[in-house]
Length: 247
Image (cartoon, rainbow, N blue to C red):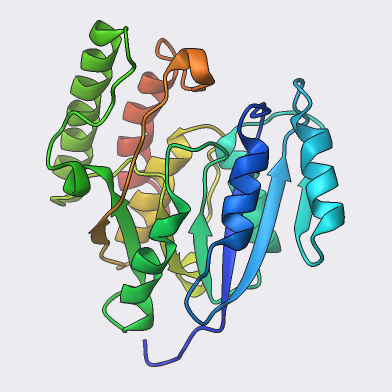
């Protein structure tokens, strides 16, 4: 923990985000990351809405950006795992391909690692909101309520199984030293990857340090990709599977 990281690798999986991808890419590119060199790795999963063409134009205009073009969508977890393989930075930060999270939080997420307080940071939406009601889908109040209750349930199950008291285990902002991935065998392809990565890092001895972050939820009509009748079952399986299986 005494070494000073020199480079930040930002892993950015993107699929069918034509409405916001230009804005997001510019935000990530322009966001200062303290005194670190920035390595941006984009994994584009063969979008059907024109996103791939926008991403390719962005990469051609910005030297040094790494672009991985997947032949078909294999899930967020699969894309992030490909990004991990390509990463060369001392610190890794995972960024979703939409605008729910604010890139202005990058320095806040990175600083505890630079200060030697931790090797692993989670950006907590709940700490910033001061509430469990972080999802607001406009006119779909019932769906918002169900999603918020679902968050409480899955967070509670994870904390119970792993002996933690985290406020936001499912946050997208997971930031850690690249060496934390050593000896981890990651296999998940979809959103169960979040539980796998977090669970295996904890089992490897890395205690998450939570910091409050900004969050603006989007609804399913805006492109949210979770499948409510499929993914929750994989999350429960992942919580127990990766708690008691091999790291």
